[in-house]
Amino acid sequence: MSLDRLAINRWTCRTTPVEQLLEALPAAGIGSVGLWREDVEKLGLAQLRRRTDDLGLRVSSLCRGGFLTASAQADRASALDDNRRAIDEAAALGAPTLVMVAGGVDLADKDIRGARERVAEGVAAIAGHAEQAGVTLSLEPLHPMFAADRAVISTIDQALDIAESAGSPAVGVVVDTYHVWWDPYLERSIERAAASGRLLAYQVCDWNLPLAAEPLFSRGYTGDGYIDFPSITRMVAATGYRGDIEVEIFNEDVWADPVGTALATIAARYEELVAPYAG
Amino acid sequence: MSLDRLAINRWTCRTTPVEQLLEALPAAGIGSVGLWREDVEKLGLAQLRRRTDDLGLRVSSLCRGGFLTASAQADRASALDDNRRAIDEAAALGAPTLVMVAGGVDLADKDIRGARERVAEGVAAIAGHAEQAGVTLSLEPLHPMFAADRAVISTIDQALDIAESAGSPAVGVVVDTYHVWWDPYLERSIERAAASGRLLAYQVCDWNLPLAAEPLFSRGYTGDGYIDFPSITRMVAATGYRGDIEVEIFNEDVWADPVGTALATIAARYEELVAPYAG
Image (cartoon, rainbow over all chains, first blue to last red; front, side, top):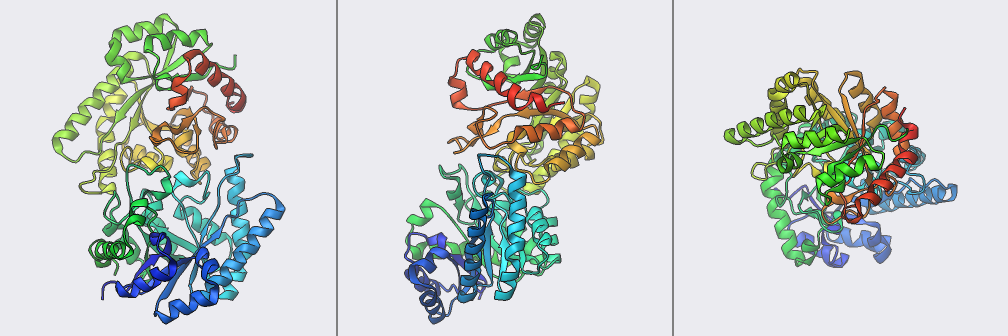
């Protein structure tokens, strides 16, 4: 059936308790879920794994590692340790990949170049641990509007530069339509990612306007905004990508919808705008 | 003196009548102003030129042409005519360059690629007129957060691709820190612009957080946000750029400041964060 590759990121239904969301997924015909470390904290690793197994759910990804821009030595060591724990959690959940958000710029030095160098060093430092755990690291370019406070990785090309410099096949990128839809070199960079085996995940949601007061929450149901999902999905499919397609929406209105309504909307939009172009 | 190259974009003091702003500039030791077509409408071209001449002011730029993404034939023809008029106005004011904002995506087709092609065609169509008028066209990459509704040109590299495809030496780019500070390939793209003689203008203002309710109005006084002005100014200066450095701020708080206060703040920040690195 056409929902085969649809995965729901747990934050899409953030206001629904995770146990309830997991149960709602098979009922909606959805077989895959992207989890957050908060879910691990809440239920415990073993219990969370048991729930997904009992329900026959795949875990598409774990959110999130990263935040590697701190310059103080103690903060860096602690961030690396935390990332190694996140890798272990992903492995224990059967998640193939850990989504990595780079971290932002320190207002004290405003040194975005230095922050980017520290991200590259941090990724290289944990790549071996990921390889041993059988987990990939999906570096996530975030929209440039988050470069200051959230992620100094802003484009797929930049993420690939860092991935390649880590010298490990375990490091790649996640393509999230919200963050990269505007990129003039999108098709070329998606091809580059796939050509080096580093196109690890594909996430979809729309760019809605006006921006929400918290811009992070402007992610909309596919079809509600400006993004051309057939075109971008074709670019991804043309590379041979046949993995999960994860819907990750942060939106107060979506969170206000009952979970069944939200999942039905997501599934219908997916069947209309994504699945026919996904290969 | 160190304010020699400082120019004030007219919108920085948007709430001050243009005649009053023009008079305030020499009093603040500032010799250059970036004007808007609204000022031309208000005072008339001859009168506006007379005022700047009488005050000994240079006109650093005219804002703005562009908005070339419409797909309907009549709309395209009308946009081209309007751009030719804007070029003529820039020439009449003695402004060396017309700042061009590309225009956004049509929500009816969501075709950003098509919109970009129409921008390239439109720029090529008016480049000859600009050459004859002795005015350059400064394509302005806007922050990707404006790609949907305002400008489908998002990076310096992309602007240069379009400029080069126009086949005219009159087409180049304006580097505005607010829009491009996050670009991982910033230094390389600034060098590329200068190497082909297409680095036409440099505008400065800061990236403030949190974003304003109207994100366009999040532009702050240099030094108030996340941008490293010494570093970016050094990149620009290293190419040999010695033109005006225009301060363009859209910010409700700045507009609430008395014009003398705003100009004094801008001048002090310029002398601290920009002038020492400007070559």
